[in-house]
Length: 307
Image (cartoon, rainbow, N blue to C red; front, side, top):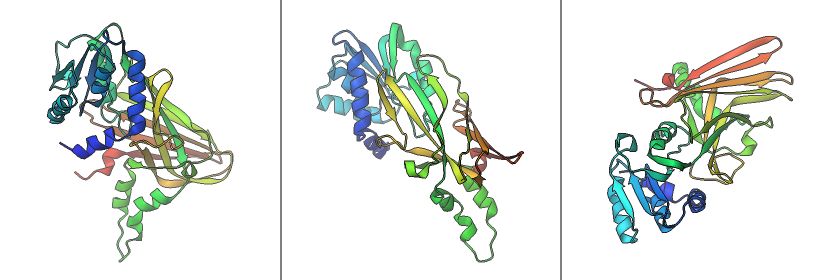
């Protein structure tokens, strides 16, 4: 069990406060039943119990379930039922009024949020609801070269060695990095994808964003982040413009920097697949239209791993 992983999560004050307030708004003391899917140490389920939930079912298939039971006893948390199974493996789930799940990653869907929430909707009674309810993803060009220089260090090794194939592998990857507004272009941030978690969602998704450049600038990659609406009026965000959480942004590299001029058009198409067979598959194609010509770059994280 990776206790450090769970420590990082439960130590995120902004995350905890947002989920607590969302639960408080939905739970009717003495009446609401709750399923905490992927419950981890049980924090969200414990919150629900303390807020007066009639019963809380905690689904967790990992060893952390033993710790959750210990914490529940130590804190005298009542009305909890611990189910040591992945929620998708449960056939006859107890119907509930509310499903809550925090299976968000730095890439919003990397922990199979779409698939988990899509399956867990079968736990709901008629009129039931889910937390979170909606996820939006955003893209912006990165104009600071610090990450690009880090990834292309292969070119500076020297000794008469050509390490270009290794450099290409490094660029065909996603990177979790902390980015600031100063790292980004002044071009508008684009919302490129939206998933309503109250409905079924496809594992294979496409996201697109296009910009018309207003001034000369060099783009080294793209920043990707998300905003998650727990309930109307309560959201979490991994935006570089938002208060910092334990999540960070993703950096999508370019093979070659784009030296854009005023009037140029830059477009990115992002294709992802988080289905069970694919794991986490991500590809992105970037087009730069300049002086009547279009230059393309295609990247795929499957090219960025050693077999």
